[in-house]
Length: 259
Image (cartoon, rainbow, N blue to C red; front, side, top):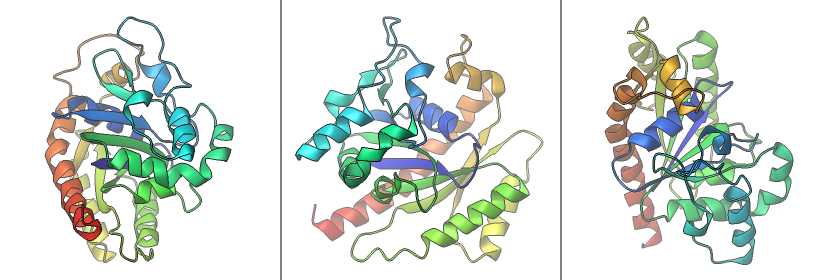
Protein backbone atom coordinates (compact mmCIF):
# COMPACT_ATOMS: atom_id res chain seq x y z
CA UNK A 1 0.00 0.00 0.00
CA UNK A 2 1.44 3.35 -1.08
CA UNK A 3 0.57 6.61 0.68
CA UNK A 4 2.08 9.75 -0.85
CA UNK A 5 2.24 13.12 0.90
CA UNK A 6 2.67 16.32 -1.09
CA UNK A 7 2.10 20.06 -0.98
CA UNK A 8 0.36 22.34 -3.44
CA UNK A 9 2.88 25.13 -2.88
CA UNK A 10 5.77 26.01 -0.62
CA UNK A 11 6.95 24.02 2.39
CA UNK A 12 4.01 23.54 4.75
CA UNK A 13 5.60 20.61 6.57
CA UNK A 14 5.31 17.67 4.17
CA UNK A 15 8.65 16.13 5.08
CA UNK A 16 8.14 16.38 8.84
CA UNK A 17 4.59 15.02 8.51
CA UNK A 18 5.72 12.08 6.37
CA UNK A 19 8.57 11.27 8.73
CA UNK A 20 6.51 11.33 11.93
CA UNK A 21 3.55 9.51 10.31
CA UNK A 22 5.86 6.69 9.21
CA UNK A 23 7.47 6.64 12.66
CA UNK A 24 4.14 6.03 14.44
CA UNK A 25 2.64 3.70 11.81
CA UNK A 26 1.80 0.48 13.69
CA UNK A 27 2.56 -2.06 10.94
CA UNK A 28 5.52 -2.77 8.69
CA UNK A 29 6.35 0.57 7.06
CA UNK A 30 8.95 2.19 4.81
CA UNK A 31 9.60 5.92 4.45
CA UNK A 32 10.57 7.04 0.93
CA UNK A 33 12.11 10.37 0.02
CA UNK A 34 10.60 10.92 -3.45
CA UNK A 35 11.00 14.71 -3.64
CA UNK A 36 12.47 15.41 -7.11
CA UNK A 37 13.79 18.76 -5.89
CA UNK A 38 16.31 16.93 -3.74
CA UNK A 39 15.72 15.37 -0.37
CA UNK A 40 17.50 15.43 2.95
CA UNK A 41 16.41 12.16 4.51
CA UNK A 42 19.97 10.86 4.57
CA UNK A 43 20.94 13.91 6.63
CA UNK A 44 18.19 13.62 9.23
CA UNK A 45 19.08 10.34 10.89
CA UNK A 46 22.20 8.23 11.17
CA UNK A 47 22.25 4.45 10.99
CA UNK A 48 21.84 2.60 14.32
CA UNK A 49 25.63 2.42 14.70
CA UNK A 50 25.94 6.19 14.33
CA UNK A 51 27.35 6.13 10.81
CA UNK A 52 25.64 8.26 8.14
CA UNK A 53 23.13 6.72 5.78
CA UNK A 54 24.41 6.17 2.25
CA UNK A 55 22.75 8.84 0.07
CA UNK A 56 23.50 6.85 -3.08
CA UNK A 57 21.52 3.81 -1.92
CA UNK A 58 17.82 4.30 -2.30
CA UNK A 59 15.81 5.97 -5.05
CA UNK A 60 18.77 6.11 -7.42
CA UNK A 61 19.66 2.43 -7.11
CA UNK A 62 15.98 1.54 -7.32
CA UNK A 63 15.75 3.49 -10.60
CA UNK A 64 18.77 1.65 -12.01
CA UNK A 65 17.19 -1.73 -11.29
CA UNK A 66 13.78 -0.60 -12.52
CA UNK A 67 15.30 0.04 -15.95
CA UNK A 68 16.39 -3.59 -16.06
CA UNK A 69 12.95 -4.99 -15.35
CA UNK A 70 12.04 -7.04 -12.30
CA UNK A 71 12.95 -5.25 -9.08
CA UNK A 72 12.15 -5.53 -5.37
CA UNK A 73 12.32 -2.82 -2.75
CA UNK A 74 14.29 -4.58 -0.02
CA UNK A 75 17.85 -4.18 -1.44
CA UNK A 76 17.39 -0.41 -1.52
CA UNK A 77 16.30 0.01 2.10
CA UNK A 78 18.46 1.37 4.90
CA UNK A 79 17.61 1.29 8.57
CA UNK A 80 17.77 4.60 10.39
CA UNK A 81 18.51 5.01 14.06
CA UNK A 82 15.26 4.21 15.86
CA UNK A 83 14.39 1.31 13.54
CA UNK A 84 12.63 3.02 10.64
CA UNK A 85 13.40 1.58 7.18
CA UNK A 86 14.00 4.34 4.64
CA UNK A 87 14.67 4.86 0.95
CA UNK A 88 16.97 7.85 0.53
CA UNK A 89 16.15 10.27 -2.28
CA UNK A 90 18.15 12.22 -4.81
CA UNK A 91 20.63 14.76 -3.51
CA UNK A 92 19.99 17.40 -6.15
CA UNK A 93 17.49 17.93 -9.01
CA UNK A 94 20.10 17.09 -11.66
CA UNK A 95 20.01 13.45 -10.64
CA UNK A 96 16.34 13.26 -11.62
CA UNK A 97 17.03 13.94 -15.31
CA UNK A 98 17.57 10.31 -16.29
CA UNK A 99 14.79 8.87 -14.16
CA UNK A 100 11.83 10.00 -16.27
CA UNK A 101 10.94 6.66 -17.92
CA UNK A 102 11.18 4.66 -14.70
CA UNK A 103 9.02 6.73 -12.32
CA UNK A 104 5.91 4.61 -13.08
CA UNK A 105 7.88 1.42 -12.42
CA UNK A 106 9.20 2.84 -9.14
CA UNK A 107 5.64 3.70 -8.12
CA UNK A 108 4.51 0.18 -8.93
CA UNK A 109 7.33 -1.32 -6.85
CA UNK A 110 6.47 0.88 -3.88
CA UNK A 111 2.76 0.13 -4.16
CA UNK A 112 3.47 -3.61 -4.34
CA UNK A 113 5.47 -3.68 -1.10
CA UNK A 114 4.01 -6.11 1.43
CA UNK A 115 3.73 -3.43 4.11
CA UNK A 116 2.92 0.28 3.92
CA UNK A 117 5.06 2.81 2.07
CA UNK A 118 4.86 6.49 3.06
CA UNK A 119 6.40 8.65 0.34
CA UNK A 120 7.31 12.34 0.51
CA UNK A 121 6.80 13.77 -3.01
CA UNK A 122 7.48 17.39 -2.06
CA UNK A 123 5.67 20.05 -4.05
CA UNK A 124 3.33 18.53 -6.63
CA UNK A 125 2.97 20.50 -9.86
CA UNK A 126 1.80 19.51 -13.35
CA UNK A 127 5.42 19.21 -14.47
CA UNK A 128 6.69 17.32 -11.41
CA UNK A 129 8.89 14.39 -12.49
CA UNK A 130 7.39 12.37 -9.63
CA UNK A 131 3.83 12.68 -10.96
CA UNK A 132 3.78 9.13 -12.43
CA UNK A 133 4.76 7.76 -9.02
CA UNK A 134 2.07 9.86 -7.35
CA UNK A 135 -0.57 8.52 -9.72
CA UNK A 136 0.40 4.97 -8.73
CA UNK A 137 -0.39 5.78 -5.09
CA UNK A 138 -3.33 4.34 -3.23
CA UNK A 139 -3.74 7.65 -1.39
CA UNK A 140 -2.46 11.14 -2.09
CA UNK A 141 -2.57 13.35 0.99
CA UNK A 142 -1.97 17.07 0.63
CA UNK A 143 -0.38 18.87 3.57
CA UNK A 144 -1.44 22.50 3.93
CA UNK A 145 -1.03 25.42 6.31
CA UNK A 146 -4.21 27.33 7.25
CA UNK A 147 -3.47 30.45 5.22
CA UNK A 148 -5.45 32.12 2.44
CA UNK A 149 -2.73 31.41 -0.11
CA UNK A 150 -2.24 27.86 1.15
CA UNK A 151 -5.93 27.07 0.78
CA UNK A 152 -6.13 28.77 -2.63
CA UNK A 153 -3.25 26.77 -4.08
CA UNK A 154 -4.66 23.57 -2.59
CA UNK A 155 -8.03 24.20 -4.20
CA UNK A 156 -6.49 24.78 -7.62
CA UNK A 157 -4.27 21.69 -7.34
CA UNK A 158 -7.26 19.52 -6.45
CA UNK A 159 -9.21 20.95 -9.38
CA UNK A 160 -6.29 20.14 -11.66
CA UNK A 161 -6.20 16.53 -10.47
CA UNK A 162 -9.93 16.25 -11.11
CA UNK A 163 -9.26 16.83 -14.84
CA UNK A 164 -7.21 13.63 -15.19
CA UNK A 165 -8.68 10.93 -17.39
CA UNK A 166 -7.62 7.80 -15.55
CA UNK A 167 -9.24 5.33 -17.96
CA UNK A 168 -9.40 1.91 -16.31
CA UNK A 169 -6.93 2.84 -13.57
CA UNK A 170 -8.43 4.22 -10.36
CA UNK A 171 -6.89 7.53 -9.38
CA UNK A 172 -5.37 7.84 -5.90
CA UNK A 173 -7.84 8.55 -3.14
CA UNK A 174 -7.39 12.19 -2.13
CA UNK A 175 -7.21 13.60 1.37
CA UNK A 176 -5.96 16.70 3.15
CA UNK A 177 -4.07 17.22 6.40
CA UNK A 178 -3.75 20.66 7.98
CA UNK A 179 -0.66 21.76 9.90
CA UNK A 180 -1.97 23.90 12.75
CA UNK A 181 -1.20 25.16 16.21
CA UNK A 182 -3.47 25.40 19.24
CA UNK A 183 -4.70 28.87 18.25
CA UNK A 184 -6.14 27.61 14.96
CA UNK A 185 -8.91 25.43 16.35
CA UNK A 186 -11.26 26.32 13.49
CA UNK A 187 -8.79 25.53 10.72
CA UNK A 188 -10.22 22.13 9.87
CA UNK A 189 -13.79 23.46 9.79
CA UNK A 190 -12.75 26.38 7.58
CA UNK A 191 -10.90 24.05 5.21
CA UNK A 192 -13.88 21.70 4.96
CA UNK A 193 -16.14 24.65 4.15
CA UNK A 194 -13.74 25.92 1.49
CA UNK A 195 -13.53 22.54 -0.23
CA UNK A 196 -17.29 22.11 -0.02
CA UNK A 197 -17.96 25.51 -1.57
CA UNK A 198 -15.53 24.66 -4.38
CA UNK A 199 -17.41 21.44 -5.08
CA UNK A 200 -14.42 19.31 -4.08
CA UNK A 201 -15.41 16.18 -2.22
CA UNK A 202 -12.04 15.63 -0.59
CA UNK A 203 -11.97 14.67 3.10
CA UNK A 204 -9.96 16.60 5.66
CA UNK A 205 -8.35 13.74 7.57
CA UNK A 206 -7.18 15.75 10.54
CA UNK A 207 -4.38 18.02 11.68
CA UNK A 208 -0.74 17.78 12.61
CA UNK A 209 0.15 19.97 15.55
CA UNK A 210 2.86 22.58 15.10
CA UNK A 211 5.59 21.63 17.55
CA UNK A 212 8.93 23.13 16.52
CA UNK A 213 10.97 21.47 19.25
CA UNK A 214 9.64 18.04 18.29
CA UNK A 215 10.15 18.84 14.60
CA UNK A 216 13.78 19.64 15.38
CA UNK A 217 14.14 16.16 16.86
CA UNK A 218 12.62 14.63 13.74
CA UNK A 219 15.21 16.55 11.76
CA UNK A 220 17.98 15.17 13.99
CA UNK A 221 19.04 18.64 15.15
CA UNK A 222 18.48 18.06 18.85
CA UNK A 223 18.17 14.94 20.97
CA UNK A 224 15.34 14.37 23.44
CA UNK A 225 12.29 12.16 23.75
CA UNK A 226 9.25 13.38 21.83
CA UNK A 227 6.87 10.46 22.32
CA UNK A 228 4.32 12.64 24.17
CA UNK A 229 4.82 15.73 22.05
CA UNK A 230 1.94 17.41 20.22
CA UNK A 231 3.52 16.44 16.90
CA UNK A 232 3.64 12.73 17.68
CA UNK A 233 0.25 12.61 19.42
CA UNK A 234 -1.47 14.33 16.51
CA UNK A 235 0.27 12.06 13.99
CA UNK A 236 -1.05 8.99 15.78
CA UNK A 237 -4.60 10.28 15.29
CA UNK A 238 -3.95 10.44 11.53
CA UNK A 239 -2.92 6.82 11.10
CA UNK A 240 -6.42 5.34 11.01
CA UNK A 241 -8.06 7.83 8.60
CA UNK A 242 -5.04 7.77 6.26
CA UNK A 243 -4.95 3.96 6.30
CA UNK A 244 -8.68 3.71 5.62
CA UNK A 245 -8.40 6.15 2.72
CA UNK A 246 -5.56 4.17 1.14
CA UNK A 247 -7.14 0.78 1.75
CA UNK A 248 -10.38 1.79 0.03
CA UNK A 249 -8.47 2.61 -3.14
CA UNK A 250 -6.12 -0.34 -2.85
CA UNK A 251 -9.15 -2.67 -2.93
CA UNK A 252 -10.50 -0.84 -5.99
CA UNK A 253 -7.17 -1.20 -7.79
CA UNK A 254 -6.99 -4.90 -6.94
CA UNK A 255 -10.48 -5.42 -8.34
CA UNK A 256 -9.70 -3.61 -11.58
CA UNK A 257 -6.44 -5.48 -12.15
CA UNK A 258 -7.66 -8.82 -10.92
CA UNK A 259 -5.00 -8.98 -8.23
